[in-house]
Picture (tube, rainbow, N blue to C red):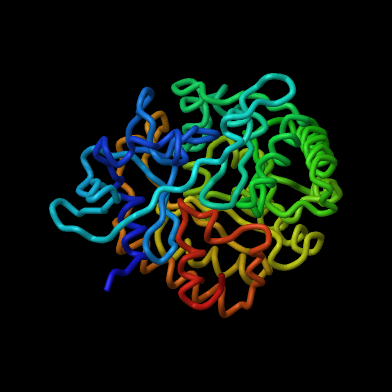
Length: 377
């Protein structure tokens, strides 16, 4: 019997490649990568269309991370994509449907795919500004390749118009697959960001008729009154990109962010946000694999005690980041640590918050999958 959580961990930490026949309809029938924010692959592929993600037989969604040296690959057998480890067949996989709106344009003439993309099966993703101020001072987070990805692929509108975001949301929702929005931007001036975000959600609500918009907002670290202002926009949940729990690791890996937002600032802000948005409607983002298991699980426990959820992304050493060429922990470490994290979250009875984020969104994280093993979907 295949351990699909372990398999997903292996595919994210080792990467994957595919024969030409298996991906021949990617970009027409099946959804392709469009690099709306980061490049998650192990190597760049400027002229090659690759799947954004795919499904395993149990419904697990996996992000496609290109690594032509990986032992994992997909080959087409009887017109069906089959996953292999070297010469050993593991299981069939399925690419995800390409949204119809990817071929449409906004009223201003921009391609909708360059405004917002579908992550996983049901998550509509927008990066309202593909820019982070920490890069200007060479103090970006060590794992981040936001700016280099934008320069290498040049595949999106870098500063999105609020009206166009509303248009794309309406078009995407009309197809019937999308259940949440996921909105973020690079670190920018907090006051300016509140204005930008408020205009975006006003546009989304105008185009969709939503009162509360199901989904998550991940701005620059929100503090104090900004948390209340984000709640007033009508977004369903607020996220905090804490990245690393251990204080010293955090300062070393996130030099720019840690100067403006300390470990303690994050904890206090998350606590306040739970009081404003409600338990289960606040998320903490970790880049899993950059610190020891013990401190990561300590963070999971503390955040869960506050009533917030956790999204721990599986780190891969992306090209263009300072940690490019390094090595993530092995799949077994990720699977074991994530299952322990799921036990902690389950014990604290944190509401799942699946109306805002779910396992179908998560091609690059394992915690939702581990919670699904425990009956939490």
